[in-house]
Image (tube, rainbow, N blue to C red; front, top):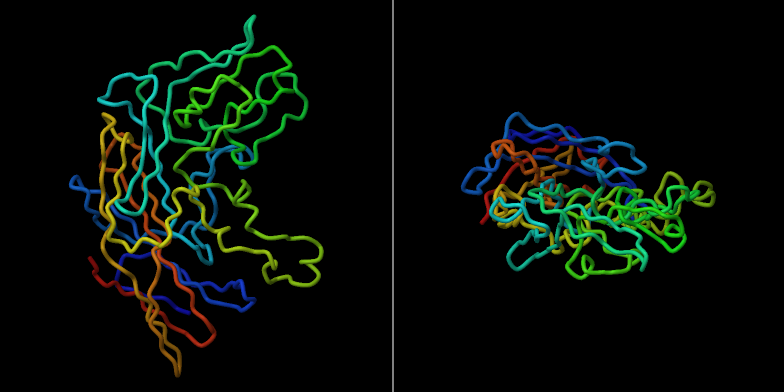
Length: 344
């Protein structure tokens, strides 16, 4: 299918095996927006290119995913992901504070950040130092709970925490048999920060995308074993689940999906630690698909919203929106026109 539009949209059509073993067509469209001072969004031109491969901070095995590739065949909820830095309240140094994202009547997610703190072995056991008072904490999974077992630097084959291989602060009884200090996570919850047991597990808190190889996401991919290769390839495994394509952490997967009119509030993620609010563009995308003897209109779903406000220069802050739709019987259609309809 050849796609066209008068809008500044990046777009792509591709085919994929669906969960019912039928071949379907997927149309994905992408728009990039500048965040104005009043929180409204302004379209950025020219049309953005679709990202075809995952981008990591460094080594794919042990660093966070920065940007998810954008050619997913479908999602069951809207992914909301945020690239940001936590800023201490009123611009003053602080040992700990809250950060959150909320959408009225649809979402509220909050965690806490703190300055660097160190677990230290003493005569009476392990203790955690008071967190250092600081002004900023990058909201990266590298500072959330996880990673390889910490404690004994001579530990052979340290176990890696599969919910967050990029994190810090993961310790077990065997890893603490050696004599060493190790860094505690800087992103967590109030109760977790008060824990006195260095081996206590914590939740993985964060706002960025989860890599496909991390749990729980990879469990939705299905079983790619020899039986699949012999009996089903190239179709998807029988236990394949579309939830595999949702990259946002579970608290930021929004179901029902966003309609594109919502206002999103970000607290503790801008200079001075205050609130930054933005309102989605208030449009829905339509695909008018045509063939020699057939035509059909498809309403596209807003299944991805990515907010990037990490830079100190607010003029660089951007919102990326992705819409997607399924075209059944894709062989029937040769052309697709992308159109927008104002809503809200």
